[in-house]
Length: 325
Ligand SMILES: C[S@@+](CC[C@H](N)C(=O)[O-])C[C@H]1O[C@@H](n2cnc3c(N)ncnc32)[C@H](O)[C@@H]1O
Image (tube, rainbow, N blue to C red):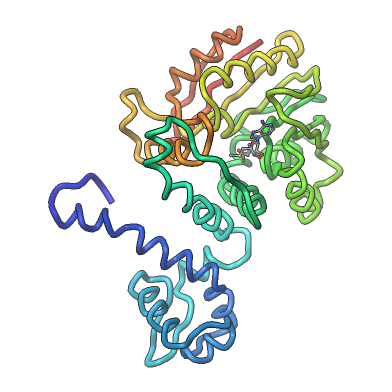
């Protein structure tokens, strides 16, 4: 929705969480997966997913109102958006949505976080890491191929995908630059999921994995190109500059860096995606927030980089800032 203009908008805004939670509850219960085999009534579906039939029928009616299932008589079946995006497959958004549900508790504590200036202790549990990293893959799959073509590698270049998560970009570069040497650096917890994803894609041999904390542990090198995608927003400006200095030290002379982020426009009240994402970072990270391209350029400069340039962000506000060692 757009900005609030009247009392109806205000109430829609206030109730917005109910719609999100209806979707999340259906995902958690496996409603869409169980409807994938064909339509059925609420009692049959309740037996399949192990729930109370009457309560499930109320949830199903709400899903019908949201356009996620279709109701004919007493039977329900997946509507097209659910069929296209909420079932396993290359266009699935299941993991990234469940990742947002995983942040629900932290959003609930947002007033305390803002009051204290830091988020309360407690964090990843259960399937958190798997949803997070598979969600990153879902977010990047479409864009990665285009980025790999827009930022071509020279033959034999040594590339570091720093905080590479699922390795989506690493695999995309490997596909267009077969003789490049590509390393994904990430935490041990993330790389456990990365290995699974690379195996599933048959890409394990093309990407090297290096594990550790990039603010503390050696990140390897020398590299000719370092790709830093959706990393800086999780850290304070001080930690970002520290990280960029470490990256610069790991680059060969003349080496390049590219930082991809959800970029805020100057003034920081648009575009909507990065603005709300910035509050998400306040809720779920120790010191992160979204940055403007100018702020990222200033951090790169403070870390010693030169020839800094930024492209125009896409419709979601995702943009790239490039620099040379
Ligand atoms: C938002 S994801 C981005 C993943 C990937 N770069 C992309 O754009 O799809 C952030 C990644 O950074 C990793 N990360 C965050 N802090 C890290 C640290 N201190 N050391 C190593 N990896 C870290 C996370 O594990 C995660 O894989």
